[in-house]
Image (tube, rainbow, N blue to C red; front, side, top):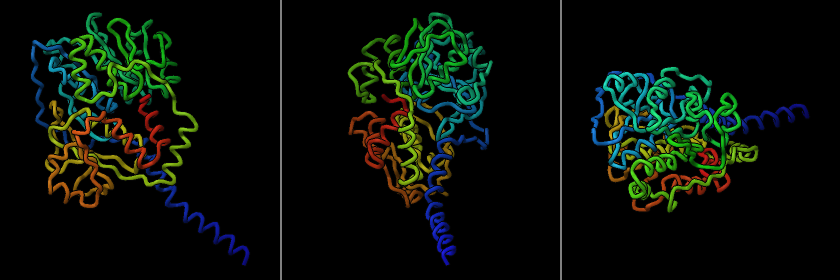
Length: 395
């Protein structure tokens, strides 16, 4: 009888633990997973219109995976100046896997840009996923950067884009920084740059770099100020409700620690890990979309996907073609983030009838990352919100 009771207690405990462990495993798996594009490639590819009176800004994308805010924040901010032709450029005419939550059509390829003899005034290097995970550098990308740097144009390496920047050799003997949590490993293969921390943006002549993901904002604003002047920079900063009077250069390079990991484990084990959806809408801000997706992806949801309710693609404010990762007609979304409530339709409500709607009020005039972190703190507590901040390197 005692043996039976003991077995019953053990089995009962395991049964109670199973949902908790399953819930936690889904969140961890989602955080680590890589989305792969398996759809068609029959798009109406159109090269963007070039205005010869404007500066050319090329933002390099790795088709296999490019960090989201690293790429889309500069794209939006340089476009906001009204003084730049801004291009997402990639090796292949194929959708870019944007880490994490959507696919994007590059606007031009390296070969096309070269055939048109387009000159770069700014080259932005976001984190390239293959370079981050496998330390595999694409020689086409490296050579294109080296061939198009003239000593008079500018390069901005964002976050772990520092890996690709270091591999070019252009930053040898020059200042270079990166995400605080990746700093110890990123610099190991590349000893010639002057690696530094506790600064949001470095500058060595025309070579710039930023700390982690969120500092794409500071890096872009710094280069915008150099190219177009303080007044233009301030106007662009005001348009995103940037929370500082001037560009914030002081930075706390705080790596994710054991206590931070414990906070994350506590959340994914004992709190509700939601299926998060973000609605892709025509005309939406690339900056706001990237901020919401990148912040919530770091909140360890059970899933975080984008959805389109009409058609297969949408066009953003500045003309990017985006493809969703989720199937709107077969969704299991707990909360749907709607960045443009004014175009949220009755049909959208029907499609996501079981979801809680998180609508973003543009009249609040708050920096979008702060809005997201405030809500995460309300959901899961300030300690977990701080853990999310560290993952964004938003310090």
